[in-house]
Amino acid sequence: MNPMREIKIDKVTLNVGCGDDAAKLDRAKKLLEYVTDNQVPMITKSKKRSTFGVPKHKPIGMKVTLRKQKAIEFFKSVLQSTENKVKLSQIDKEGNINFGIKDYIDLPNIRYQHAIGMMGFDVAVTLERAGYRIKRRRIQKRKIPKGHRINKEEVGSWLKEKFGVQVE
Image (cartoon, rainbow, N blue to C red; front, side, top):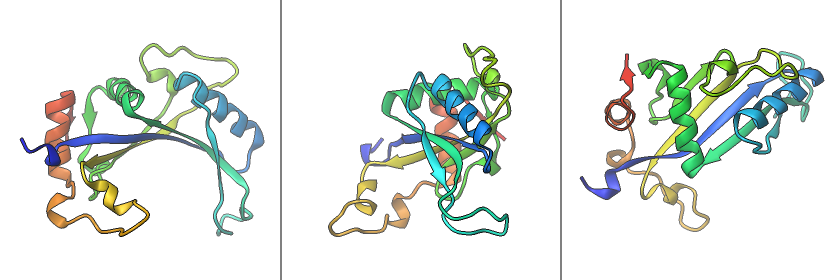
């Protein structure tokens, strides 16, 4: 196989939406630190005033980004909690995978923590190929050519081949 066509995990982002509840925000921080082995979570803030009445720049959630080997290991453990199944609707047209975990205790080797309570989180897996840097670089940004983009079918076959996941 051509090494430029090889799909790899760029990052895995964990997100907990809390609204404007400060206590839930604190529990979300503890949850993300616990699940990701003490990686420091970042506060997400509202971008603009919305119909939900949340003022601009108010904290509304927490997130953590995992990269490289940590991301791959965490993705494998999350797949175990979903019984190695991913729905086709959880893969977007860019080839990224998004799904939710209802309770963090569904993950393997994770025990219930009284200080956190019962909480869930969202998992977003960003996939890319070699050469995707051209859309992020500072000088001479370019679009990814159509033939080099990742689509749903390629992600499905990649998940089956690499992780043994059943795509429904």
